[in-house]
Amino acid sequence: MIKLFKPFLYTLILSTVLFGCGATAGVLSTPLENIDTSPLKEASLTENEKQSWAHLDLVKDTIPGMSVNKAYSDIIKNKKGKTVIVAVIDGGTDIDHEDLDDVLWTNKNEIPNNGKDDDNNGYVDDIHGWNFVGDGYDEQLEYVRILAAGDKTAPRYAEAEALYNTEYQKYLGYKTNSEQNLQYVTMADEILTKHFGKTDYTKAEVLAIKTENEQLGQAVQIAQFVYANDLESVAKAKEVFKEGLEQVNDRLNVNLNKDLKGRKTGDDPNDLNDKPGYGNNNPRPSIKDESHGTHVSGIIAAERNNNKGMNGVANNVQIMAIRSTPNGDEYDKDVALAIRYAADNGAQIINASFGKSFSPHSDWVRDALKYAADKDVLFVHAAGNDSENIDVAHNYPNDAVGTGPEVSNNVITVGSLTYKYGATMVSDFSNFGKVNVDVFAPGSEIYSAMPENEYEFQGGTSMAAPNVAGVAALIRSQYPSLTAAQVKQILMDSGLPIKAKVTIGSDKQVKSLSEISKSGRIVNAYNALILASQVANGK
Figure 1 (cartoon, rainbow, N blue to C red):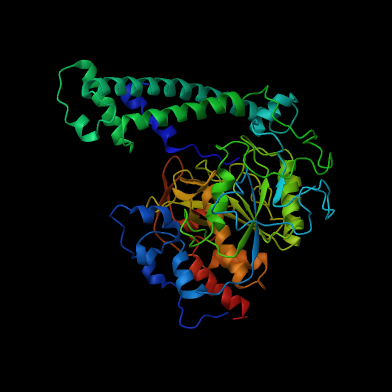
Figure 2: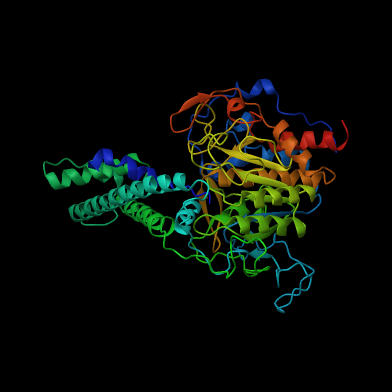
């Protein structure tokens, strides 16, 4: 599970300070000399720029996007290309969404809803994908499962126990802090509502208050803190802090709950061969809040230029929806079988915006990655959101043991960028690693589809990976002769080689991208298509 708490969680922590709690003719690659001389963007992003920044161009827009718009206008133009199937292995995906319903993979060898496995692939009525989680949703983190099993001889048991004790106490502290913050903003809202005689008082009105009244003065101070943390009103702060408290309680009562029995599929997750075809054929979200898969799918392939929502990166894609990630850590068995399902059913690219730090059956997943490589499937993986060096810290899935030899050449791991070119360009949450992170791509504040025909900004390496998967899909669509390994290398070699130093990790180390990733580059669709043309034509 790659879960990134929204900014309000960090606001909760900070609030203790206040409260005491083909070769294309005429097309040239981006001149390298222009990259690090680009002026910094000082003006705030417009709403349109915010919603589409990942598609913009560094040189033209001074925003470190992937030059997707430029790729369409200068290279792709009206060339449709070949349809590419991208499997999204994730949480539930709203396959009925207005921006996704026309870009779905359909299993033409399966007769819908007849209760039979017509194509004999082991999955009954798998029309648009498969749901390996079945009717389940809430799940423990993997290290909690290790403790719940009670086998103290299990590998990394002591490490899991120490981590659990630390995390449980940390979230208990968050809970207390969150409850206090919610109490404070509720109190401030009540006082200010009474003072103004209305609920829709404005920021200007609050900041204009001059008072000797202690209660009103405290309410103003709380409101000032709210405004300073980019929340437009105290009423909005109440919503945000309430949602933050719900997230903290969810972590304590679900993910860290040793007694939780979340598995609903009736199989043994520790037996790869137990109960083949478990789960069901409905890859949709189980609840509206299960939005991750929908958001990821939208980034890759939301219908372009349909005057709805936003544009996906790729224009000729079918999304194969595979639900394997619950509200907690995914099981290794589900991941391994999901990868094999995608590879067996025609996916050319797999997007994997999930991950965890414990993986008892990581060998099953590595075997599946090798299987996918043998089927010429590119596997795009999110690096994770712990601000860690994953050359050192455990991070799964991985195509190698630590920094050892890779079992396949089809895996590309992606770190996250913000829209602010310069020292803060790497997202503060993004993992990194000279060996285990290949490239960086836009991942902070990405606008995309949400369940029930809605749209929202979300951030994480979970958003960076599908941006890269979308570019990979453009390459495989326009140049279908290229292999998965070639596409991976093109993505790495064609990116912009940023020389600017950036800050990374919780301790704000200053590094270059070449020190924290294998390529030292940020993905660029425009340059990738140019290089793909050259490779495809043997130049």
